[in-house]
Amino acid sequence: MLLALDIGNTNTVLGLFEDEVLVHDWRIRTEVNMTIDEYAITLRSLFAVHGIELDRVTDVIISCVVPPVLNATERFCQKYFGTSPLVVGPGIKTGMPILYDNPREVGADRIVNAVAAFELRKDAVIVVDFGTATTFDFISERGEYMGGVISPGIMISCEALFQKASKLPRVEIFARPPSILAKNTISSMNAGIVFGYAGLVEGIISRIKKEVERPMHVIATGGLAALIASECPMIDQVDEYLTLNGLRIIFDRNKVRRAP
Image 1 (cartoon, one colour):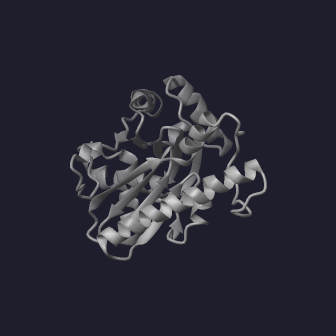
Image 2: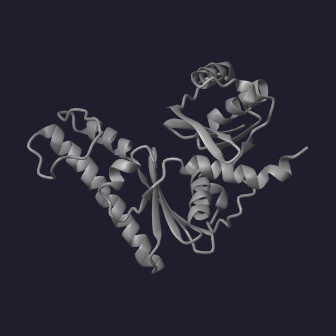
Image 3: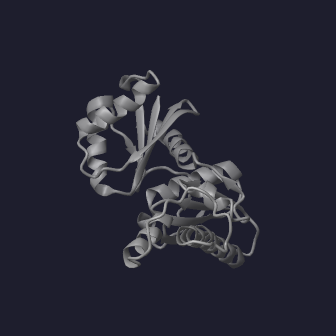
């Protein structure tokens, strides 16, 4: 079985594949100081819920934007899975030209999403990933990564509001606000966060489409994608497994190179 790990600044998403089928997935907090044995305890517990032993994993692929975590994760894979993971980065075969001033600057998760989205659509596409930061990536109809936008994520924006406006309470974002004209402080904040962020997303997508001068499909992924997409008619599709499937695709494109 293939274990795919997408290590983000806030959360780590894990997916277990049997051939091309995603059979299980989990989301845990990213812990910078977790030891390799603590990784083993965590994964063994997650696997045990579904009656899976760690030794069922034969291969691992990792996308990581938190460098301090990567070394421990690689050593964990070597100790408990007996394999060195494939790490998405320079030198990895993605099948996608990266038309960026410095391709090494593009986050691994953004490339993985781009590969998955183009494989899905086979045409020009925009990917919006709602993570710690919200990223917008444009892939051409020829399957080229053309660049994109990085903006503060929803929770980062919320934290700034909570910290700088001391009289405002903390609010949790779970559902669509009932109205833009709220009648209390918490509802007002919720409306501002959700509808305001939806406006940001629509504005950036609109500018990308105007600059490239063509219609295109828009795919959203990430933790709050479904909530924001419900307020953004420009988002055509939500795919919560886009990154995991992108990791599986990239692993398949590198299998021959990794064969003994």
